[in-house]
Image 1 (cartoon, rainbow, N blue to C red):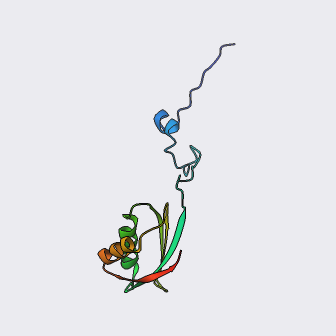
Image 2: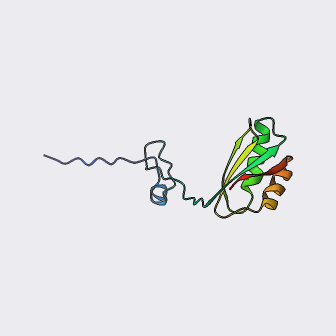
Image 3: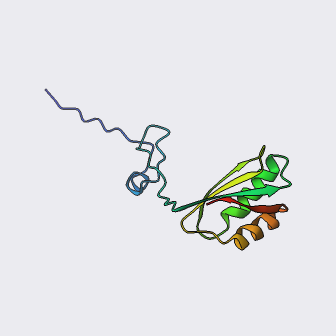
Length: 110
């Protein structure tokens, strides 16, 4: 009997497979959780947000602040939760919110 060799090629390149860049959603690799470390959480009250564009603007500006790892905006209450690797200065948060076009009322928690 003769032997037959079958080669199956994956759609992921060897570099992708070895770099861990595959998200795993297509089933070709294992998904990896993001490597973020959150040491601090603070909640701020923001005035003037009325729509999803407001949420996007505030989120984008706060993500530019050094150390910020996550931003969650509750449009209904005007509360903005910010996770960061270190405590945030209220002045930095106020400047980011002002740049987005809104007013920081104050820190609620954290």
